[in-house]
Length: 340
Image 1 (tube, rainbow, N blue to C red):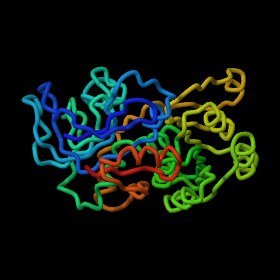
Image 2: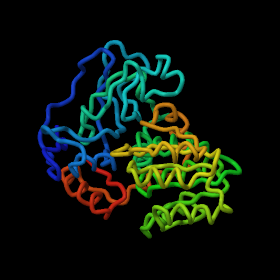
Image 3: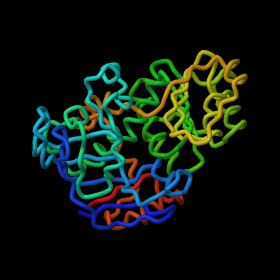
Image 4: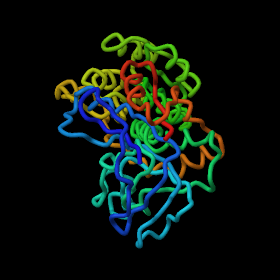
């Protein structure tokens, strides 16, 4: 099969890879009608995460089940399924508590490389959720978004306790931040402040439910959020970037007693203890347990109540994956859909 491989920072190649096959009796192999590039893929692409050897890329996926292992009971060939970036058994104590991305038997999907024509999914029964039937082609981007960026934005909103009568601020205007706006809207937030400097992203944030746009960053951004909230700060703030600046901006935009849901993959973040101590802010986040939310998200998408697929603003053939990475790195695209 064809698949994208990162050889070194800035060096993505689409090449022949071995076809995936059943290795464990709990595996499934699925054919991918679409895949995509994630903002977190840009960390190794930019050299911020080390690239020691060629590495297959991609961890977001939907597809048609081709084959299942002998111990798979709930997933069967021919189904259209949605998974998440972390395989989980969905039965251990941590999974049952809603933290499938910390499953004691789990494993990341990234090593399998989902930017390809097919994919092996471990722990298929616990990881994959089938749609009611084979979806219309125009729904596939939205289901693909559910496998990571929508589920991650949703977790950020839940971790920040977004809901009715709340003002929510979102730090980050990438795919996760934009879909956190959508999540906060669906959860009933009264006011949603999207922090963005980029007009196309601002427009999409408004379409997803943002009521206010703040273009300032850092101290100025925090001051603007407080100005919009009577000097207090937002009740709920979603951090969707993962840098020192974005985390401090999120904490500084939150009112005492408020909640920060942080879902940006942290790089070089060090929180000043004294500032955190006196903030009276709750912090909760980490790798999103997307599997927790998949049944609800699939139902919303299937019934066309939400359209997270709008976050894809560039579609390319899989063979042009390198251009997709470049477009996202240069912020010419929010999120790139790849068609094998």
